[in-house]
Length: 288
Ligand code: 5RP
Image (cartoon, rainbow, N blue to C red; front, top):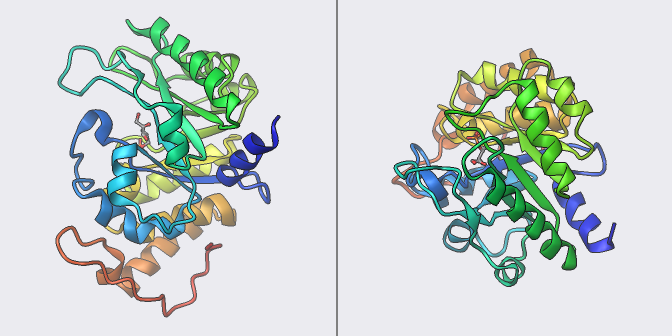
């Protein structure tokens, strides 16, 4: 593997412990102004220092992320359909490799829709993206998208993950499921688990814990962080699971402690300027 590609991969999956905490804020690319992500800049600002990398679109990166950040960007380069359109699976590559390089992307992300009407198109697009990205030493993360008509069980997800890896994806993002070990065992590249729709905080921590225990290198969580009552407390607690090897009880206790300490400062303000005061209390989780 080329030095540049390996170096970029190590920005996303930390070599010290082979773990990754990605913050997903790319939802608008087909959902528009998703609940609690209406103003990405205000959502991202207080969370940025707690994630290892940010998964986003070029529009959000250019408008809503400070250029001074050293957090690696996982740039979504696929799109072309919307939640109100005919078929979510009809995606193409929408961002050129030149623009990804201008944006200093550490990885490119795209979805494949195995078993859908546009399965062929999205799988071929993945292969072509890997061809191009490898020329520049940029890793590709394939998202095994799920849809109304697509399954979310180990049989389906191991099929989709394996196909992504066979096309050359360097990381696969998928969903947690029963018999998750089957998905892990049959996929030769690292797997990162998506958070999925909003569930109670403790359950989301359980999901992160199960995913790691089951063999995932980390999580790429969106809604369960920024749709939480307390997004900062939530990302710090997820981080405690991913990088601090916390149990669910320990992580949920941290969540509650942070909520009780500084409820005002921890909730990103949608309409007021964010106060980014330094933390007074020493956090117990393994913070960057
Ligand atoms: C959408 C995506 C999202 O980034 C992914 O679903 C992670 O976000 P969430 O935790 O909200 O599910 O790739 O296709």
